[in-house]
Image: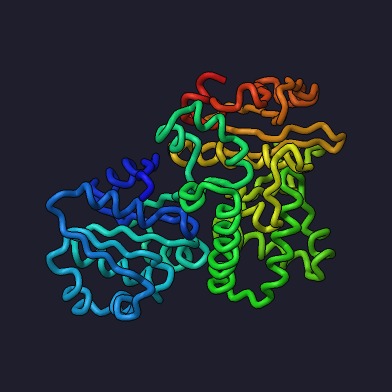
Length: 391
C-alpha cells in the first residue's frame, strides 16, 4: 500500500470544519484525485468523534438525503458529530437538503465532496448562500510531492510529470505501460462520463474530437470559430463545451491581459489541461521528451498548472493571464496580485529571454522574469505570498 502523501489544504479544511460559525465544507476535484482518501484521513484524526459516511451512489442513502424529510434525517444523523457525503452531485436537490440539515441540526458538522462543479455548484450555491466554505483538490502539486520525498527527487523526475501527470493512481504504478493504461481508463471511463452525464451532451464524438484538437494546441491561443469550423459545430456550442470541461476540472482557460488598450489582444484565450497525463492520453502520445515536437507546449502547460495549484493551495487570490499585442509582442504568463504585476516568459531550455520593450513601455511599474530549466523550482514551490514579495 502506498504511503499517504500529505495534502496542502488538509489543515485548512480541518480548521474550517471545526471553526465557528459552523459552515458546510465543499470539496471539489476530479475523479480519482484523492478526495475520499483526504477526507477519511482528516476524520481519522478527530478522536472520539462519530462520523456518518454517506455514499451518494448507494440508492437508499440518496433517497434519504434527497427527501427534504426532517424525520428521516433525524433517524440517520442522530448521535453523530460529523456527516460526510461523498460524490454529493449525484443526490437530487442536494442543496436544499443540505440547507435543511445545516439549519435544523446545529451540532452537526457537514463535509461533502463532488467530482464536478457543473451540477453540484448550481444546486448548492443558491440554497446555501453564506453557509459554505469551498475548496478544490488538484492532482498532487510540486510542493506536496517534494514534501513527501525531496526536492532533488522531484527535480530528477521532471520528464515523468510532463508525460504522465500527477494523479495519485499514476504515482502508484512503476512502468510506463501501466501508467499509460491507467490514464487511458481514467480519461474515457470517468472524465467523459461525468461531463456527458451531468451536462446532457449527446454528441460524445464531438466532445472527444474537441478535446483532441485542444490537446494539440496547448500553449497557443485558440479560436472558437476555427474549432467550430473543424468540428462542424457553431462557435457558441464549442464555447459551451469548453465551459463544461472547465467546470469538470479537465481544462483551465486563461484570458489575455489588458487595461483596455486597443492594441492589446484580450478576447482570445489559451486553454491548458489540468493534468498532462490526461492530455497525453487523449492523443495517445507518451514518447520521451527528446522524441517529441510538443515539449515547449508541455512545459508551458506544466508551469501554468503547477503555479495555479500553488496559488490555489495557499489561498492566494492572484489573477492569471497571458499577454499579446497585435504587433506580435507577447508574454506566456502574467500574474496580478495586490496591485503588483509580473510578466513571465517560459523557456524549456536554459536561455534567458528579454521582456518585450512594449511591456515595460505599457506597464512601467511591472516586473519580468524568465522561467527556464535552471530556475523553475522556486516558481512552482514557493508560497504565493513569498513569491510575490521577492519578485
